[in-house]
Length: 65
Image (cartoon, rainbow, N blue to C red; front, side, top):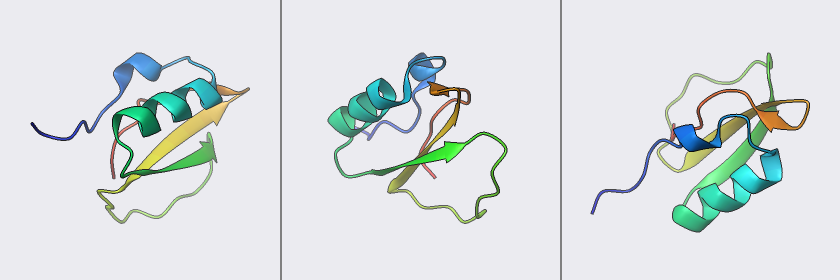
């Protein structure tokens, strides 16, 4: 079975709930919480999931990379 790479169901969810679900489904990833509008590197890292948040809620679809 392929590893999950996207979590569209987490849009609008509280950041801690999103972090728990992401880590629970893919324990090998490192979750980074990033304020919306922040600058981030453009490198691709299969073991990273960024949660872009505003007001404590996920505002972009989380995905590996």
